[in-house]
Figure 1: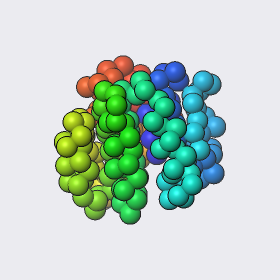
Figure 2: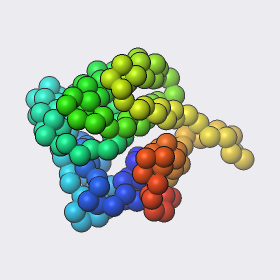
Figure 3: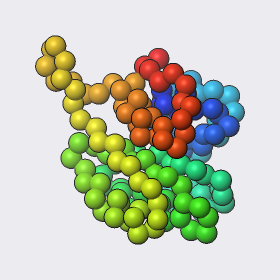
Length: 158
């Protein structure tokens, strides 16, 4: 659902970690040069391998996380890894409408990480209420990111 945002970021500035099976169509549309890392944060081996690799990437300025509520321990692990031994990356975390960003915001404050929460919900339109589109989700996440990375290109549904 963040595919429009990912396509707007220059390929050399993007490391995309995702379950490639569930998002294959969107991932295939990503520009050449995007670093793709297979990740299933619910699988202990995949999770451990990703966190080990993450500790080797030293120039990450910001990180957008979108992790289901039941797996926010993984988000905490990513934040702790990003804060260890380097300038802390800025974290933009996308949350579902019922998730509580408080514990991760508290952790970020303790680690000295700048943290922004993007909450998802419904949008009211002429037909009532609907879920947000991929473009709307990307635009709101991009707005949170814009303070650190001001040139995002054109963020819209493709």
